[in-house]
Image 1 (cartoon, rainbow, N blue to C red):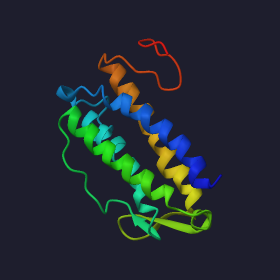
Image 2: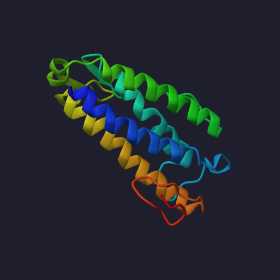
Image 3: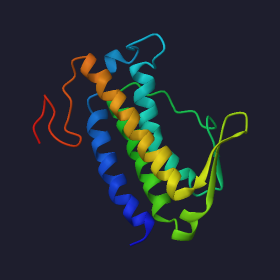
Image 4: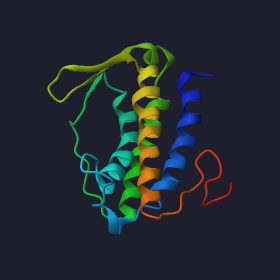
Amino acid sequence: MTFAEETLKEYDSEMAATRRLLERLPTSRLDWKPHGKSRTLGELGTHVTELPRWGMRFREAQFQVGSEKAPPLKTVEEFLARFDDNVAGGRQAIAALTDDQMREEFRVLRPDGAVFFQSPRKSLIRRILLNHLIHHRGQLTVYLRENDVPLPSIYGPTADEAV
């Protein structure tokens, strides 16, 4: 089994769990945030929606953070359509990578062009795509809980939903 095939099993599972969460975004509360230093619910939802898009960047030698701006998303349907497109594009790009390409160095650049991360693609797919997504998805569960939105099952039952 190639690294891409192994990774895509986890990718598919994590994306399905993330979609279940995005389906519950209370779009009437997109400006809400838990603290002055926090992102709004809409900003966090958009970030989670955009993270699978990073998979498409692994076809290149490097990626500059902030080089793409997400479109404004206002409805659950818009969030889900964008997420689904990003997931499909990311999945297709990862599936096309060979094990040799997975071992090649990949650079993530800051907006000023300085190197933010540099590591083999296979490490960065785990770190800045999957782990990063899981981290922000966890934040999103807290935002939803604070807004009395029932949480879906992610890795097991929640107080709101049995498996």
